[in-house]
Image 1: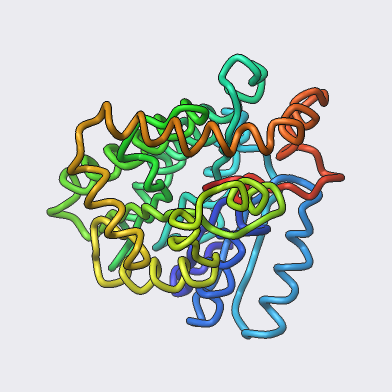
Image 2: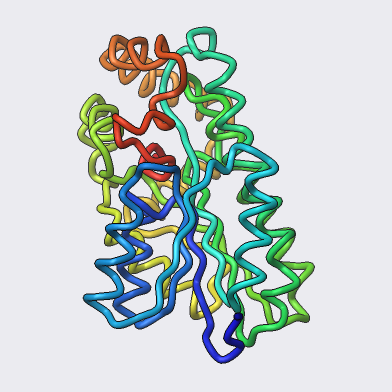
Length: 295
């Protein structure tokens, strides 16, 4: 039975990386939680830990949000059982490799998770969010949203969608109780995949690296204050300024130099991952949750 007096924060991709950091930061703030992640990602253990350590209500559902039916069923379950006042659309995947080396399954999963799942969950939960006061939506985009990025291609395009979708929805909802924020972080040290890609970068790029805990703390603080666009870290704000200042062709040139080097250093690793029957982020034995592959 839904308890109208208990509000919940819903976080997707909550088992690891930034999603887990969001869950821990929310728990520290005594916010009740509804968590989702792929099956076999130890979400039950995290739920138990949060309940015991913080004395809050925490529920979870394991599901694959690249599946449209699963998205709709998850939304129905969440809205039927909980009063959701904060939605954090965190689940997403990305990587660095030649477009032609990417499997069609990997590309399709990225589009379905980064774009479709985020859009549909927002739409399906919005009526419930409008019943809570105040209510917030936080969509996780990226600095990559501000420019085309060679060797990433789909990822920045999907993050640009999230960014512009969030700004447009914010304007639509300005006369309601629902506030919309979009988070545009730079590189985040999460799993071994992301660490490997970051290690292949220049010293300048490494200056903008943040931990998931740092990003989550800043993002929640600014979201609750109603900040529209959240770019955590001074270096990332400087980078965002210059990215939007310089001509797009120069951005593409610089991105090519940066990510060609990263792709060359990590190509053997990526090639091994993509020769498997399904993307690594879906393979339970590799413990690679969607949220961990952002960045």
